Image 1 (cartoon, rainbow, N blue to C red):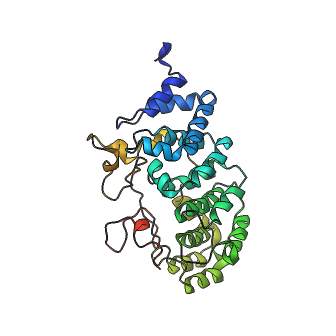
Image 2 (image 1 turned 90 degrees about the vertical axis):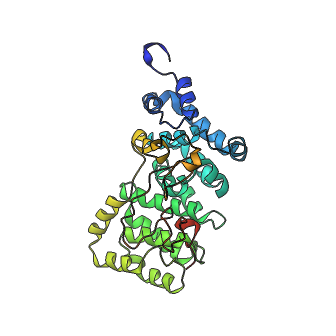
Image 3 (image 1 turned 180 degrees about the vertical axis):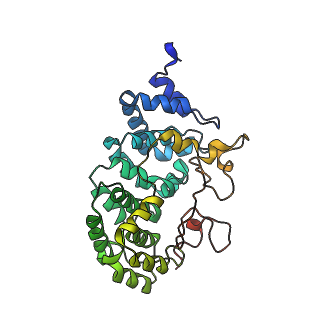
Length: 310
């Protein structure tokens, strides 16, 4: 520690790299305070992670180093546009590598990070959504990032609905996928009047998982005033990454006192990798979230079991 008890950038980075099961609150707070000075180092960490992803996973199979995750969240809080191309590259990594590096980050907060750093440049996000070679959960996160932009007031609702029409009409590969469920969820959250017929057709073609989003939820939204639907969506959808201290210290990993491997430290039904986050509160009737227990009773996560089975 330097004079005056102020942490240097080197000390902050060292504290973020070391993991002992305790949240490095002071280091994260110091990083936020030293935003201008530390941002280039955070960008360097994320870039190195993307460049050497497979190598890093091989070197750190137990997921002890979480510096890249802290860096991602801090850059998202800073709304750092320079992180955007790095996060696009990050999202395009193979899903097994992403899971090894970040656990359930893809289905929990990738959408929020993308929205936080993209500014008004949505083209790379749309390219992810429309790319059938990518993991469907990554594509879902990209879709939901656009919803966040609308709910945060940085993208016009009508602009996004026009893009949704394009997805329904050919830009989205027409085979059963969680992406269709995400599309209908997002459209329903914005009031689905413009695409109601297209949603009905998608259901008739069995493109949507039977538990992903209920037709009754779509019908309920159609019967409501648009502003009421948008207000409800704002209550349920987390927006941009805000206070990283509050975001990260709530992860299940940091709530454990037993010195067990990180993979085993989350409670049952909570995300179970290095980005172990508290279980989501599943309050939206008719929706099934990827990390929620599968309704078939298998004790597996929905995304690892019945999602996409029609």
